[in-house]
Image (tube, rainbow, N blue to C red; front, side, top):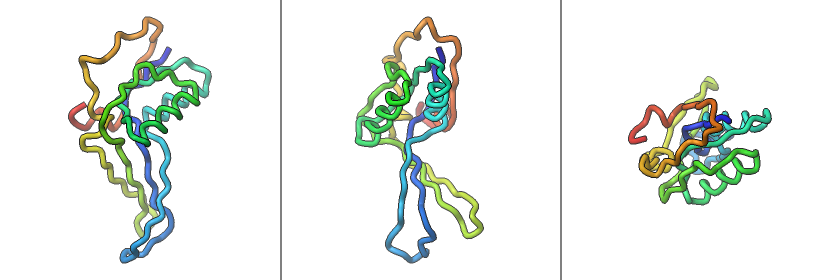
Length: 139
């Protein structure tokens, strides 16, 4: 079994070329986060996988957990927390180069409670740690 540890967030894409002075932005949000995607990819390849992360109890967190479960990812090691879901905003500049901004201060994926971490399943043979959650505080 694989254990994937890291963030689960929503990638929010700014669609279209809204003028700088426009009052309206068209947004499209997708569940994501590199470790979240790795866990789903492993499950789609038929590999047993569990996901370890802090995930919000908010409406976005509910969708993240539902997506993991629908893909066959074990969520027994997910910590549900009363904190918001991180948002990764993605837009394009005038040359089509992506620009990113992450909004995650105080978010669930940064608030894992070490004392509440479960014992690891003895079936775990590989651990994948990633990405954004490993370089931001406090997690």
